[in-house]
Structure formats: structure tokens, C-alpha cells
Amino acid sequence: MTEPLDVAPLLDPEIAAFLAALPFDIGSILGGLTDVGIATVRELFDATPPIERSGRTDTTVHDLPGTDGVTVRVHRPVDASGALPCVVWMHGGGLVLGRAEGDDPRFDRWCPMFGCVGVSIDYRLAPETPYPGPLDDCYAALRWVHDHADELGVDRSRIGIGGASAGGGLAAGLGLLARDRGEVPVAFQLLVYPMLDDRQITVSSAWVDPIWPPAANTYGWTAYLGAAKGGPDVPIYAAAARATELAGLPPTFICVGALDGFSDEDIDYAVRLRHAGVPVELHVYPGAPHGFDSLMATTAIAQRCNRDMEEWLARQLA
Image (cartoon, rainbow, N blue to C red; front, side, top):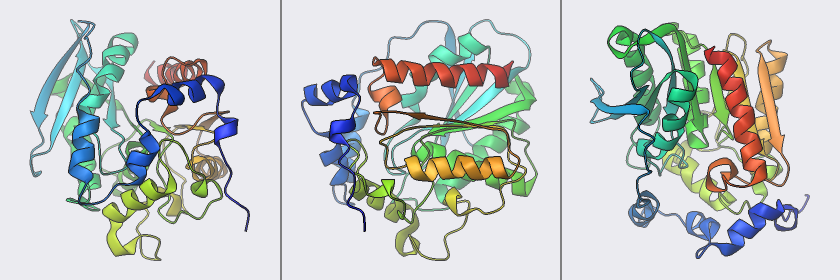
């Protein structure tokens, strides 16, 4: 068996310098996740100060009917009128961490830039809420946006979905679920280094990514799926890499760092989408680990990624 790749010497120089300057080792913290320590790690990662808002976006928080306390954050350009396209977004965090507030900077930029509504979902987290709970929350939010489009000022024909990391995996599962239920049309899906495969059988899944190493990935999937992780009975909606019928999914954007542990599963999913006749755009960024576009946002490679993402999104929302 091939030895796992040592990604450290291959890191983009700007990213390597960023990681070296940090006062703590993110990969070691996340690689040591346990059910006992998860609350402490959540507090650590949720303690970031709020962003300085541009004043160009209004944000309101709504309870999601029929759920166990789930809320959504609705972002809308100030003074916008009429029915706007919408992006329904799922945050990252390995299915066990993160909050919808973490995507406020994204929509503070995107909503006025594109003239769109952004809806970010505070879905319930594993291990307290395993599959299908988080995905059910995301579907409920998508259905709520569609059903309340007139009140929210959303164009029902232009509702897309997206997410980063675990959120990208939830978005991929949500795309499959929406296609198969046929209740809510999805215009596009934007999958940022999505977490797609619980089996961890690809070559890259063994690489020690400095942000989300294999041990963290094992913990996240086990928290979500329990004893079913890696077994034969995991539904396609829980781990989209297991889906074999991909025809009928909406136009898709996938981006991933070349050194990300998810890179093989993401590239494979893009290839299979293409073979199924789905319009797909794939970007793989050299020297980049997991989370590079947001954690190392000032680096040139992250700026290139965000530019590619926004150019594609602009075409979908036009």
C-alpha cells in the first residue's frame, strides 16, 4: 500500500507561512476531537469576534417551523426590491462544529454584489443529532424558503444551494434529496471542498491535512452515522459519494485544494457528474489544504479560488 503523502513540503509558501505563524496547531486540535471534548472545541471556534458589517446588507433571524429550535439567517441587500435570486447555504465544521453566523461575512459581500438573498442554516450538529437530523433541517429550510418566497422577496425559479466542507456535503445530499422528492426545484449547487465519502478509502483521505486530518474526518463521520459509518447501508443522502445515479442534478461548481484529504472524492464526484450529463465546473488549487479559501483568505491562491467561485456564481444568479 502506498505511504500517505507528506503534504507539508508541498504547501503553497504563503499558506505554509500562515500556518507556521499560528499560536496553535489547528490540525492537532481537530484531530483530537472526542464526544467529551467537543463542547470545549466548539467554544474555542465560536469565540471569534463579530465582523464589521458593511451596512449594505440587512440580516434577520427566523425560527424554522416544524423543527427542534432550528433557525435561519436571512440576508438581503439594503433597499433591494422585487424578487431576487437566492443562495441557501450550509456552514462547515465537520458535521460537529460551526454556526450560521460564521457565514455572515460571505453574505455581507455576496448579497449586494449579486443582488441576491442569502439564507444560512443553523442546522443541528452531531453527535447530539445524527443523520438524518441535520439534513432534515436543511431540507426544511429549503422548503421554507420556497414556500415563503413571496414574503422573503425571493424568485422561486432561482433558488440555489451551497456549502463548504461538511456544509458542502450536506448541500450535495440536499441536491439529491430535492431531485428525488421533486417538491422544490434547485437552480444550482455550489460545493466548496465538500465532505462526501464516509468510507475514507481514497488515497488522499489518508493524507495528514494540516486543518482537517484523517482522525478528525473519522470522528465527524462517526458522530453523524454511528456504527453505520463505512458500512454497506449508508444512504446516498448521508454521503453523496455513494450515489450512482447523478443525472438530473443542477449545474454544479466544485472547488478543492490539491492537498485536501477530500480532493480525490471531490474530483471523482465532479467526473461522475460530467458523465451523467450535469454541467459541472471543477477547480483544484495547487498547494492548498482544507479550508484555505476562508482561513487563509489573504493568500493569492485563496483569492484566486474566491474569484473563480464568484465568477461562476454571478453567471448562475444573472
